[in-house]
Length: 343
Image 1: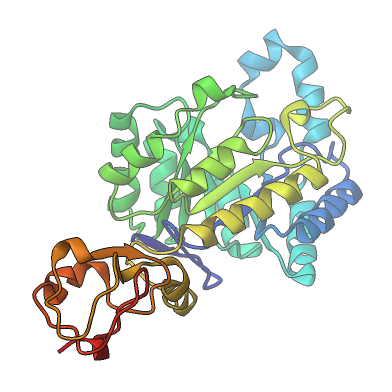
Image 2 (image 1 turned 180 degrees about the vertical axis):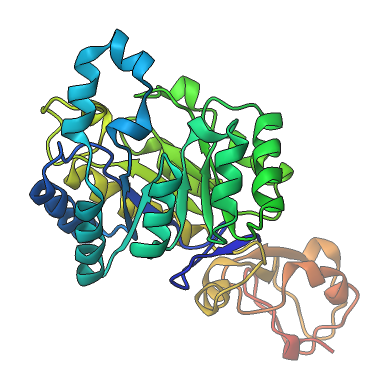
């Protein structure tokens, strides 16, 4: 199975223990104390990583957009985090024993995350797949990548992967993603996980989940997803950029538990018979039994034999080895025939 090693030594792989990312995005509403509470909640939920967004007014939209949408500039400024705040959150995550990462939208933000925050990986947003200059810059930082693929064709994903690989990226996870917030189940197309795995055999495949509920994430684990990214909120009722489709802690915790349990239940493709199952054979399998009273010295015929529980005697698939044998002792009707009763 394909695997990826993050900078902190964490190994993620297809069908392995799922690496679960709590995506905070802007649900902290620009309040660092709320952001810390979300980190605390992510720890309690059982997530492996808390991921933020590093965008700012300057890096997210152009003047053209702000001129046409003046309220957006105030909104972006309010909901963004300053670099020093992100560094404080990175240190807080380290203190709490959970990984910190973020999605950069500029070269300066990439440098800050890699050099100052020491992130285990850099998350590349779906919107960047057709942005080769930015991909090259990230690739040359020589850090593991988690690449989201919303809005992109297979050909565009292949081109982005090529740019990153040729820029020096060796460790990468590719996430199936549908960039609709929320994504309804009829549009989530989880079999793309299989399609991506077939096209990108070198890399583990994960799932960036924008659906409501846990069904899609759990199904993705059954398909072998290495990473699950899910949006977290402390309160869905509050107004926010994606707060309405994010998941509150109790439901998120249930999702994490289901994903972990499903991955464990998948087991291995190798057929393994447990000792408990071997013990069950004696109770549940059949043995060769007599259909009539057989006297000592009689030759046993096929019509003299049948198979019933328990499985403590001669196995039914050895019937041909009993037919034609001479009974050494009297054999009572409807009893299990034992090897020592045959001549």
